[in-house]
Image (cartoon, rainbow, N blue to C red; front, side):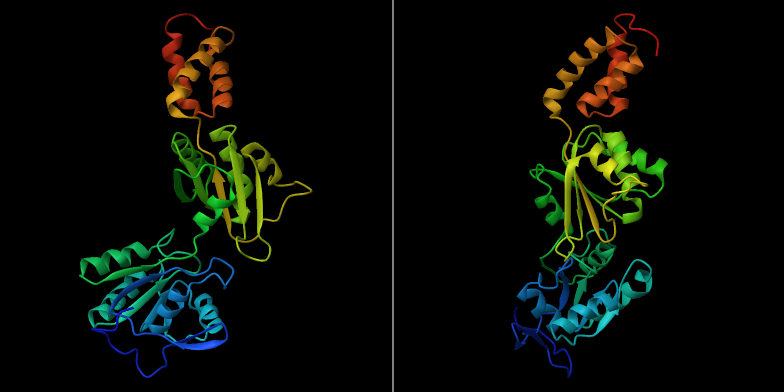
Length: 312
């Protein structure tokens, strides 16, 4: 960190403890610092992150109780202030005012990288609009950790966050996600995990998936398989239902290659339409290809115009 054009953090000592040693942190240049924190294992924090949160004037965090555990673990005395979706209207102007006074402020989430599935972008946007420097201090991310463990394609991925809690809205959103040519990464809560997996299996077809629970923590668990098998494992009422407590990430394989799938779908549909009704043909091909039923249905109607393939 540079030490020119800086202000002191007050009378407190800007220090942190690492490897049993107390280290003096360099003074931060004024601005907003986006600091990634561990997603479970408190050892997964960088030395740069420790120095930053020790040197800034204030740490803005989702839950001060959660961040205080990290601060106490590393002997950091920087004052904490709450900043989350419920108090953003009141807290955001105060943070911008601090930045306007030439202070350095760190933004952290309860776990992982700030702004991923939290309202931090509004603060970043306001800081940028006001002309303040914004610096990223990268580190842990549940999204990337789950993606690397899922044993699925990683060249392209789409982060969805949480699916809607109500089934109708959730199924509609899954249908919208079905044609995205990338691995899907989603967050989910334990109580909704079984229902979400069932809807994913029904809406996306025979794709592979992974359920990553409590990443980096003592009871970390990774389950891999087809969406259908995972939905069965986590269905309510199962005598051997796996544990669902804790933080959960779902990773889903991408659909079949789009460039070759169009030809394959047409061939499969022609074959199916020669044997069964349009409705049955659509169900058969959607299951075989992982394509969304509505897309297969539309193509089936176009192909069916050339002949009588039975009643729907």
